[in-house]
Amino acid sequence: MRSVALFLGALSALTGVGMGAFGAHALKTILSPEMLAVYQTGVSYQMWHALGLIGIAIIQQLQAEDSALLNWAARLMFLGIVIFSGSLYCLTVLNQPWLGMFTPIGGVSFLTAWTLIAIFAVKKPHQSRYARARR
Image 1 (tube, rainbow, N blue to C red):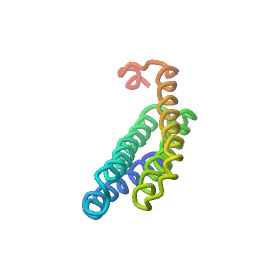
Image 2 (spheres, helix red, strand yellow):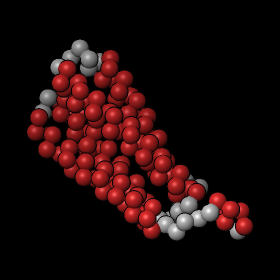
Image 3 (tube, rainbow, N blue to C red):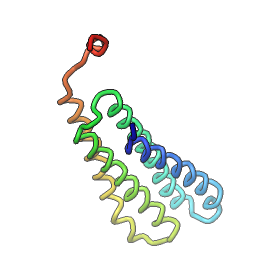
């Protein structure tokens, strides 16, 4: 079975590692310490939310393959990575401070995704681990 959330999570982690290495090696001598910290914030949020996407994929695989809440959470989490981390990368590398105005949009996307996961958790009926074995 194909998993879009798993694919997006793996892709985000892959590019996050690449962006982290790029920042640590190529940008370390070019950016000021403050701008390097901004760049590293983008990498950190990208990696954490890549893991979030992989977590969504695992939950979908085990419990709720067709959950609209989880599908939207995955979309919003990936969109948050693109907008939040992407705006920080562009802001630092291109030295265009106005790009920072997009960063909060990505942050709201992250918050909404985590809220949808919390709603899913509250709405999901409790399953005993033994209930699955009886099916």
